[in-house]
Amino acid sequence: MNGIQVIEGEVRELIRRRRLDPVGDRASLHSLVHDVVQDYEERTLHGGLEPLGDRDVATRSVLDSVLGFGALQQYLDDPTIEEIWLNDPNRVFVARHGVSELTPTILTEHDVRNLVERMLKPSGRRVDLSSPFVDATLPDGSRLHVAIPDVTPGRWYINIRKFVARAHSLDDLVTLGSLNRHAAQFLRAAVASGLNILVTGGTQAGKTTMLNCLAAAIPPTERVVSCEEVFELKLNLRDWAALQCRQPSLEGTGEIPLRRLVKEALRMRPSRIIVGEVRQEESLDLLIAMNSGLPGMASLHANSAREALVKMCTLPLLAGPNVGSQFVMPTVASSIDLIVHVGLERDGKRVVREIAAVPGRFEGSVIELAELFVRRDGELVRGEGFPPHQERFARAGYDVADLLGDRR
Image 1 (cartoon, one colour):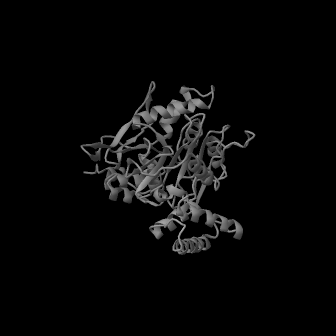
Image 2 (image 1 turned 30 degrees about the horizontal axis):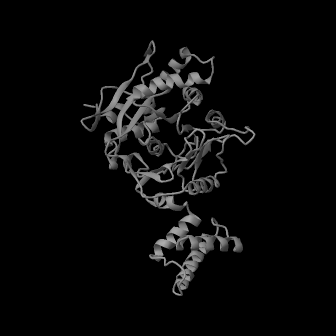
Image 3 (image 1 turned 90 degrees about the horizontal axis):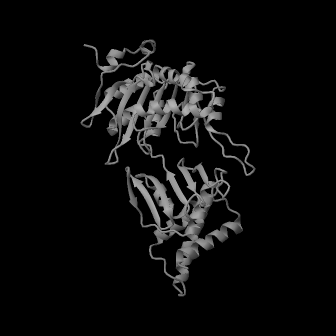
């Protein structure tokens, strides 16, 4: 047992004796750790104990173990790291600026299980043989996903997706080079005019960040209700109610799926509804809400705006055998107004790849799509299409021709 482990054991014993709360008594615990480290160093002068080396490193390591999440805390504290994942205890990876790298951190199976238990404790969620997957939110807002055997080959898989928000508005995205000012001006007007917007892209493409930035353009007089699997959206709005799903209990009861949240949100007097990510049959309820005159936004995994439309025509069919394509197709065409497709480039940069409009027309099984902005030669340029509902822009005080730069 090395010096840090000895100190950590002594600190934990003192915490139990003094009945300190690691969450509420952080200042006292900081002082306690510094005192124990100092006492240990004094005892090493008399021999018999392993010297600490760097005192500051030892103190930080003990604080991370007692107050934080052990060896992973350094990555949670690093603002340049966006995601952390474990394939097995001695292979800990991080994504920095969109690029993955293997870290030198080596854990034991006991460390991994202890970390998962501590991470899940604040949320009240669980993971066991009856429920081998779990999604939860860490105290700092990071999203945690855990998978355990027997759905994994004997190892515990952990993914921690941090919400490293470098952009809080469309202007911030312009500064970062994700889109140009022309497109940002149009999207800001589209949100203010109440158009229904679908944000699409792959994993880590920046869909949640784009949703947050679009939501920043919502007029302050509106009431927004958001629905998510776990809390990820960080909306800076005056009137915002956030809902998240709930796992079933040990008896298999009490589960609250995303579809239930969408239905309940409609009873909360929303001026606008936001669904963090559409995956299954909740898409039907969202489409019905949008089609009834309630503006909405959502994100969706898709490889392009065209594929997003196809997916939105397929997901509602999961709601039941009484839902057919003859109903879904025209509902999608009339409900979704804009699709903002984002992507992650090879260098880790997140960009808007296309902004497309859905005019509302379809033929057979194909819904018409109009290109408003497309990326060519690395630049987001004006396409040839026009957005629907130009009367909504006019009521909000915008001229579509001016927004799109088509005024001659």
